[in-house]
Image 1 (cartoon, rainbow, N blue to C red):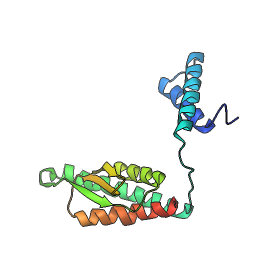
Image 2: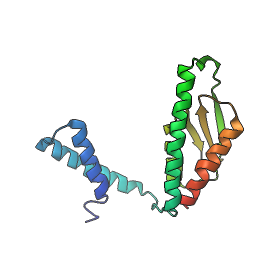
Image 3: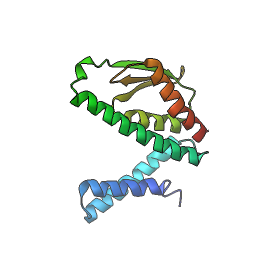
Image 4: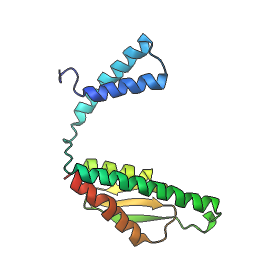
Length: 162
């Protein structure tokens, strides 16, 4: 079965996404979505991703709650800046964050966390030096951002995906 359908969940997800995006259950869309799901399943197999191992599920839940709270707080802070008319006094900037996290799944989750938080965006990651470059909309304290990224997000991710 794995030979003909290497990633059945991924193929099914692609089919479902295709049908939702096209808002149709027509036979042509079903065939095209199924073909796309199969083709991308085979393409994904050639990438040979490392096996995913989640070690500490409780910590993962706490991290999700922490990120949710941080995103809400960041939304409110950004709203205060924009609605309060303080946007002219805001200092944007780039922050270089040294990371110990090397797991590709952990780095992907960290990228999602940083990009999902309003006012921050993942710019680049240098694999050799393990330096993450982020852009912060309202940069007040660079050291605080480095501490936040490494202690609140990267360190728990390293334990989760160890």
